[in-house]
Length: 296
Image (cartoon, rainbow, N blue to C red):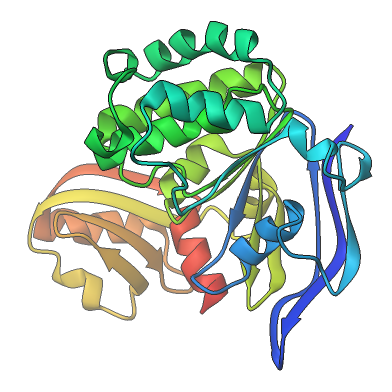
């Protein structure tokens, strides 16, 4: 079954086309990445899915049905901007959002401790939201998003404010939700997370889809012609345009695109003469590189 079908939607504000003839299909059980630079139309698209704003034309179907208020109780939405009531306790906030989604109080109470424990917030159950750190508030907002056990979950920048430990914790929870049958759409600028989690993506730029499909197929379009190298010392060969078309240098780690006709072996031979090579790998371009090249 298709969990989300967006069919040729448009949204304009005066002369600005925020979303322009966008079509997306997300299958049940997928983790799907909705990507794009700032101002590309991602948040506008999500708000149309949630019926916060209406498309000027085009249609949106959720779980095989036209978008309705009743149907959206089967959707969980984590907005980029937090919407927590800071004077409430953690438990009060969760119960409030559960009630909005039609969850009986007794049922919600039975789920609270399970979720608080899962996300390491159980000791904060009776604390006010304003006492929580930014990362804790993000985890609390996530609990409010999924407590009603939605079939479709939309996460806008879900890893914002989380340290590496809590990012990994949230990643594990997202994978568990997928395993239990949920479809998950998330919008993020963290390409590394997308590469690890997503099965399919849609890259939006200026309101249009510019790259879409299974992540493995998307990467194949760009070929396996990138070199990832970790090294110590100097690497002046990187500036030799007869050898290197372009590169992205992080100090002691570099991603290289060879010049036309140059083999990885030629680059390795030159690199060995100039630096100590700790890692050398021929690979597909990273999603981060694809994102930058396509948007440029």
